[in-house]
Amino acid sequence: MGRFEGKTVLITGASRGIGLAIAQAFNREGAKLILVARNRGPLARAAGQLSGTVMNRPTDVTKLGEVKQLFAEVKKKIRRLDVLINNAGVFTFKPFAKTTLQDWQRNIETNLTSIFLTTQAALPLLKQSRGEVVNILSISSRIPFANCSAYTAAKYGALGLTNVLRRELRGEGIRVMAVLPGMTETRMKDEFNFPVRSEDLLQPEDVAKAVLSALSQPRRVTIEEILLKPSAGPFSGEN
Ligand SMILES: NC(=O)c1ccc[n+]([C@@H]2O[C@H](COP(=O)([O-])OP(=O)(O)OC[C@H]3O[C@@H](n4cnc5c(N)ncnc54)[C@H](OP(=O)(O)O)[C@@H]3O)[C@@H](O)[C@H]2O)c1
Image (cartoon, rainbow, N blue to C red):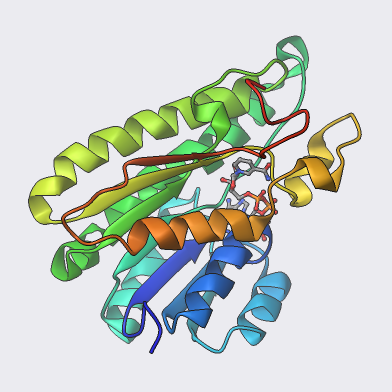
């Protein structure tokens, strides 16, 4: 029997990269999966390879109306939510002077506002199940890197929000955790304007393993934050 048998897990940004790896890991452990991303085709392909999928729902998590509709459907059709994984994200690599207002808003809305919207909409179901929230943040939530102003502002904000949520929701029996990956081999790395070698990066499944390990702790334990870095290479130090 899997560690998450009988649990329902909703993952945003589940169509590829880290979100898909998290979905695969929960699938192996017997969870029921609700998969969310904007584009229908890749989301349906992800759902097709995961036997535990009970819903795959194209949703833009930056849009209040779409998020409300998603959770109304989860409430009506699935009637339960144990784990919310806020993973959807975008990244812009540009000097501050060249960062447009559109870049800024896209980063803030996808990496920060989406967590506000989905977590608020999920709360009634999470209160019922005394559930858990895992926010996939970034090493950029703690360490500022040049050419990542919009992303860094959003990820610092998302860590602040996560820390407040943990305090507020403790009384409801809801655990709130943050996972902060360093450079990971996903499509996101294509945004860099310099070559990046696979062997210097984390793999999406490394992040998934950290998420499942945090959630596997006894309920009396909250792993508040996990910071993951490659063990060697150019991204293993302070940057
Ligand atoms: N890769 C890294 O080096 C790295 C390092 C640290 C942290 N992270 C964080 O890890 C998370 C996942 O990143 P990744 O590297 O796996 O990226 P990715 O491969 O680009 O995947 C991003 C996922 O998010 C979805 N998404 C984007 N905008 C969305 C929106 N508005 N509404 C719903 N879904 C949306 C995408 O699908 P659609 O485009 O179809 O919506 C896709 O499924 C992000 O929060 C990222 O900041 C990544």
